[in-house]
Length: 236
Image 1 (spheres, rainbow, N blue to C red):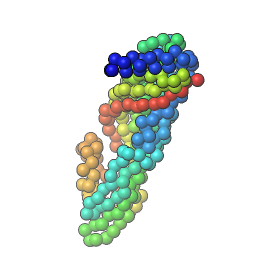
Image 2 (cartoon, rainbow, N blue to C red):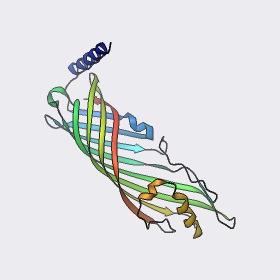
Image 3 (spheres, rainbow, N blue to C red):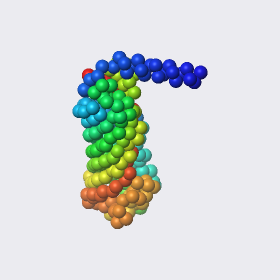
Image 4 (cartoon, one colour):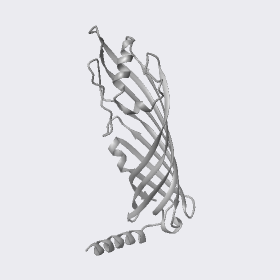
């Protein structure tokens, strides 16, 4: 039975490849990005027997499955931490097969650069030891530049359509962010605020002397990055 299923799948792929026109342009929609509330489209152009270039443009809204829960302590309570913004991803790909003959399908290797720019805010209330209530309002800007390598496989499914599996894309990410207070708050707020943030493990990666204060602060860090995706493509 398993052998028959494999033969059937191979026959479908062969038929799809045989009826697929060889074209130099392709557009794609990244389906897996919807999980995080991102709409990303890509354009790929054939430039050689084995080479292509690819450019992805995406926008992330505030909605998505990946959000940070807000702070909830005796003194500080905030809304969930959301973020929105854009990302731009140029890629270069090398296909194992001659894509001038087969079209842009099959196994490929490549390299990429990814830039992401996000805006975020943090709103809530703070109650000091004397019982006085204050409004909390922070604006944050985050930019991330990542570089890395990737490997994937593009599977033809029907004539001009294919599914692009980006299997692995390890790299390094360079993060820069700034945070600015929009409200007047007492000095003791920042001690309580930094203490509340300690439960977020990402802050362990910042410089040891980094502390949020009543002035605009900037910081940067470097972290490993990883890409993977499933996209639906159309060639023309």
